[in-house]
Image 1 (cartoon, rainbow, N blue to C red):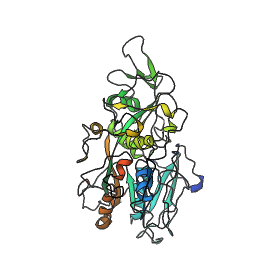
Image 2: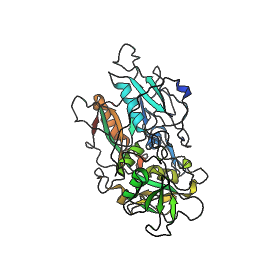
Image 3: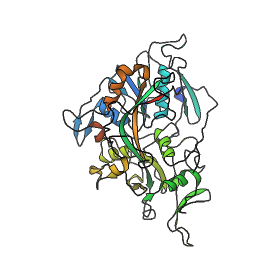
Image 4: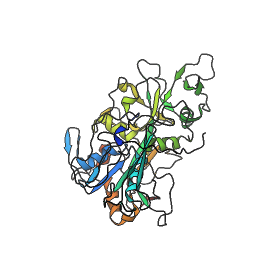
Amino acid sequence: MSRPTSRITKAFVAVGAAALALTVTAPLAANADPSTTGRANQISGSDTIQDVLNGITNGYTSNGVARAATQTDLGSWNAFGAPDPITPKAGGQAVGRPHGSGDGVKALSASWNPANDLFVQTVSGVTTSYDLKNVGTGTDNDGVREFDYARSSSKPGTTVIPGTANDKLTYVPFARDAVAPVLQKGAGTTYNSVTNLTTDQLNAIFGDGTSDDGKITLVSNKPVYNTAPGTSTNAQLPLNPVLPQASSGTRTFFLSAIGVGTVGTWVTGATTGGVAENDASALNTAGNIAPFSAGQWISQKKGTVASTFTGSNSATLSLLQTNGVLATTGSTDATLAPNAAYYGSATAEPTAATFRFARDTYIVYPTQNAATADSYARGLGQKRVGTSSTYVVTEFGFLRLEYTGTTGRYASNWTN
């Protein structure tokens, strides 16, 4: 399997924010930025958990019934949409809309890091630097922290020892999600035999091109699925793997779960571009295969959030099993729910060996604010629907975590 590598962007190009042109395909879900102004706390980042945070902060509708907001002092900004850039707080700075977990944590860092107040964002190969002028940096302070929290669909890539000098950011668990491959089968029955992919096969599709069982091979530098490997009458089904944008936590988690460090050159979005994560409308070519948040799959199919299943072939996009297990249970869209055999127990973190495609999502805050921010952040995933026993996160397709009282904390240095 491929070994992880790192890619460093060396050139910074100064351009006006209005000139940024996205090559990623933005989701078609309705923009649900803060519905009111002047909220004391602001959060951005992960696309995966943006909709459930929108529901918690703005309210939502489930099965035709309106649900009231339960945290109205928090403004949650979508990963994509207009306007871009945004101005989270009155009197603060305009900042490029953070496109995913990585950007969200960088923007939070730039809002609080006393040694570096620059949020550097690369879109379509163009890099723009936003000076957030945070408190304690140089002489250009404006007294405004643009962001107080970040949404992250993965734990930090590099952790530090809590309580030490580099413990600047704290990640606390929010809700359990899982990632699964989706395959665009298109018209007809050609791809119907593809229902399950192993970790090794996914590694081959997105990384090294050849699986141990021979079902995945490269033909003209494109992966194919061999329905009958080793025979002269192989039915070779072309695959067109696609990855989300580089700042996507879903992308980072998925590649780690399947053991890919160096992405295959045949993958759309291997180095730049890609598509917005969890966007069914961007996967319309037969053979398209991409990682997809199971929580987003459930909530879009159930109609809890605006669906991106609007492209020409979105109806034939199929959620696949991995290693023989499907991420969801339920025989209809209305009954979809997380599959415990895929997600693991809600009482502890999923283990990489058994539940490698399950992931806890996180709320990130500056460690210096732990006295007030810790309980605030941990409480977001425990919000109930009114006085009922139903939790908001479950209505959005996530598993409510039961170990978030005092554990699950990860520490990280600034990332900007």
